Length: 307
Image 1 (cartoon, rainbow, N blue to C red):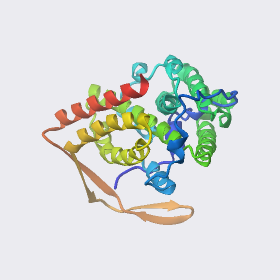
Image 2 (image 1 turned 45 degrees about the vertical axis):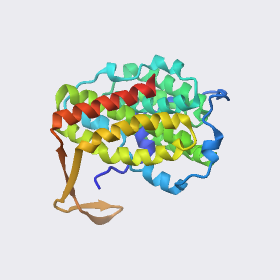
Image 3 (image 1 turned 180 degrees about the vertical axis):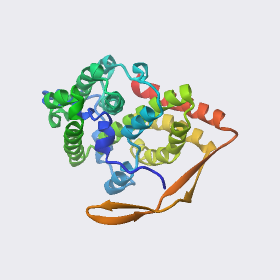
Image 4 (image 1 turned 135 degrees about the horizontal axis):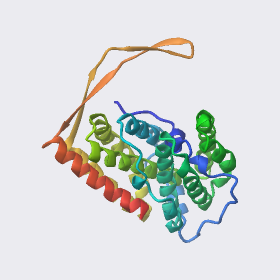
């Protein structure tokens, strides 16, 4: 399958700044009544933790999406972002986790276009949301802020962000809060696809349209994980309804693959031959109708996440 394997740290850090956002902040107390129920995290699930982790590794990275958008020649548009000010509206742990993912994807988009003028406000939003779900202690906000506002430090920013996220993600899983990690991932994916939809609608770029069609495989993986938690939590149930609608829209996309020429590359000093697969996309009844339906359903899901 052509599903892109990614380390979720990179995905979330999509803006290389995602995590970048939060850090030496004091941890704020999570609203007890709005906390994602412990019963969800601790309940026996049909899927093992290892299976969930493997699936998460296959979910598209917002960084990849943002790079494809820039390569299409489309310009930066701040209007597609979730306004940083909306952060104050997220009072439940579920919404905080979802929008921590959303803002991470926004940061990926912002940093791909080197828009340092708006970085800090999004870093602050991430900081507040991370503190709100008690993971802000893993993010060195001051250092990340300094790196984020200097484009020459992009590689250092990426490395520090990955390290910070890995610590946060490991902590969440050790605390049996895989549901929180899953909510963050879902928010990042939805926002990345939302931004892609906006550019596709405006430009009809062929490569981006294919990237959007490719999400047919990703959304199925995401749903397996989300449905797992939806069995015990109404928040995940509501989100799953929206994502299932997106999945239904993808029923009209068919993806087939043909083998291309093998590619030889060097990995750790050794030559490795990789089989190249070329995807082909078919749309029924036609591409324009199908893509419009997908965009509509993605926007509906994204509205649920950020409202």
